Image 1 (cartoon, rainbow, N blue to C red):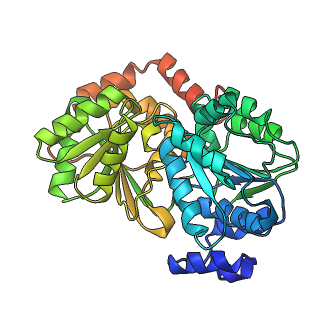
Image 2: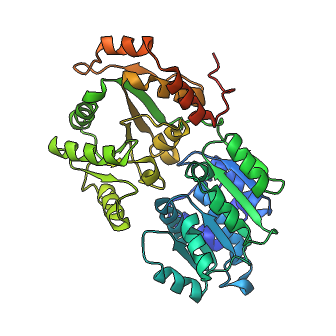
Image 3: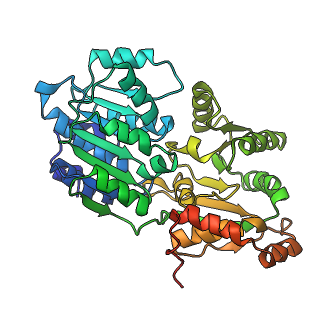
Length: 410
């Protein structure tokens, strides 16, 4: 079934055909007709499944069908990070290149002046982060009175980052009569509670089992002592000649430290996190995409929105405290049907984090040892015998939002 069967504007079909799109993905097949039918949508879609096109194409179609309203801000897409905002905006521009529509982007970390000028000139579509959108609302440089289509992209991350208060403030400035779409890679009680306040009789779309990792991603855990993780990381990249490797750490300090040490190992590496300037983050990402650097070390927040064609390798240098973040991390690879490899380095003190991840995935992940990097078995058994129940409880609370009813099915 081709895109032509979805009754989209021919200018949109022309644009996506030129980009090599042939068949809609499952999320696009289900979401596009529902959005064109003016229904509110709550969609569960993993990263790399084509979810941006699933809402961008029908929104562009509807806006292009009402040229008399051109220049009024009618569509708003909220994203949790500036990187994701850039990615979404780029998609709208690409898909809508033959439509007579205008758009702009608004996020923090850069001057607000150019954004104000663009808004004054009149736009049809705005992609924004909640914080910078509120800045514009407070300054009076934007009006949301004419919004017809509202999208929350990666809604689960917005909740994790504490944007719920900002979201409520933004909603007060918008008309109640609108179409609202909520896209999330993971669903939990918090997301469902949020949907009740945002959506009106929504259609629920889930194209994969809930909270699952992409099937194209090969997941492996290498057990290793924590003080040898950096050495093993460099060994894997160097001995297997991996190029373009995205590495996740939990902290900004750890991110910088790992990148510095890997450079000493002869692997050209840069770090990207929230304390870096926007310019520095964009340069690092650009050099990574161009292959000028071999490895990019990132925190979870900074990695949101990173979209690299054919990225094959992801390494979890440390498992995340929030189990659902594991799904987002490894979703950077195995995108749009391509294959990927996700490696997690597990030290004995992180076993409780692995339990939380496996509970969310409802599966066991294969564990291996690399010859020469075998963990100290005395440490392994000591940590198993002296496991901290408080740590486990905190991990469960993080994984399930304080609701410990969810457990791995045996």
